[in-house]
Every structure is written in C-alpha cells, then in structure tokens.
Length: 191
Figure 1 (tube, rainbow, N blue to C red):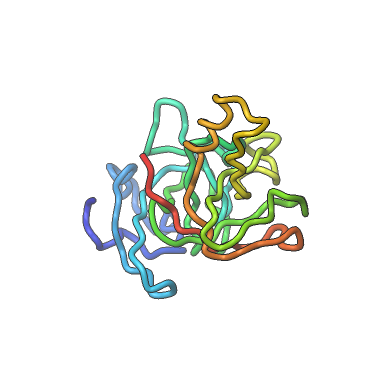
Figure 2: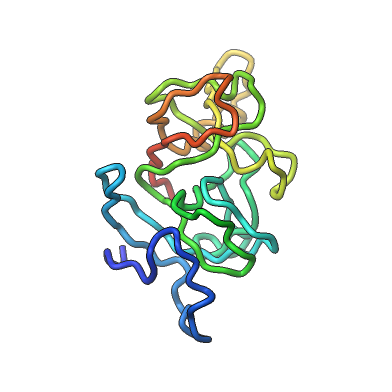
C-alpha cells in the first residue's frame, strides 16, 4: 500500500490538466481509500490503458503481457482471466494511453452480460467471474456472470480455471432480465 491520498479524484481523468512528466512512476501504485457510498474501504491500483481504444468504467480488464499490475490491454474475455474492474466512478471512457484506477479489493459496480441467459442468474453472496467475450474489444467482453463451479461435466482443468477465475462475491442478485446491469460486487483482492 502506498497511502490513502489519491493523486487525483476518483472518476476524474487527469491527463488533460497534467504537465509532461507528472505521471512518471504512478503505474502500479496502490491506494486504500474510504468509499462513502458503500461505507467500506476500497483498494485501487493505478494502471495505464494500453489497449489502443478508450475503455469504459464498470468493465473488467486484463493486464498486458509483461506489464503485470501496471498496464491493461483490453477488456477481459475469458472466465479464467486475471482481471479487475475499471473503477465504476468514471462516467466517461478513459482514452488510450491514459492512467486510470482499477478496483483490486472492495465494493465496485460491474456490468453484467448482454444475453438474458443462465450466466446472468446469481444470488447475493454467489461467486462471480468474467464472462466469455468474442475479443478483448468486443461489447460482450469485460462483463461478469455466474460462476458455475460444477464438478459434473467439467474437466479438472476447466474447474480449476473457474475457481482461480473468481473475482469476488455478488452483493446484488441478478436474473435473466438484468442484462447490461450495474451489479455491486465485493472484489476479493487476489494476486
């Protein structure tokens, strides 16, 4: 942990107001702050958007190869992905090459899948994981769904991948009618 004073406010894109060099050394730093909305601490990490496209808050992202913990290169698209949520306080997209916060641990809002199917059905306290997306830039990527964790019909590698792919627990329950819905999740802070 690097302290509890953020270098910029949550939900704000500081790039337009910073001078050259002001961002040096911030990638990978973590901060623990109090979230007034959810009356809980949240652990945030600063990462650079290296995806080449603008990324939206409330979506899951994966780290760029060779840049674990410092750069993200697109939305998560596989259930076993090592992914984190872009902070839900961003109301606009984060431009390519910008710095932004991801939520490592604590409460955050994440969008559910676009299909009204079984992946959107989970109760409060159920484990959630990343849904399968077509590509790391697809509208179906970077979303949460129900963790199946079913022993019957699953191969051992698939089950292990699903267990390691757990993001945390849903605080908000969802049904097939809740597509593309902001869902409160308590991220479990895995590394």
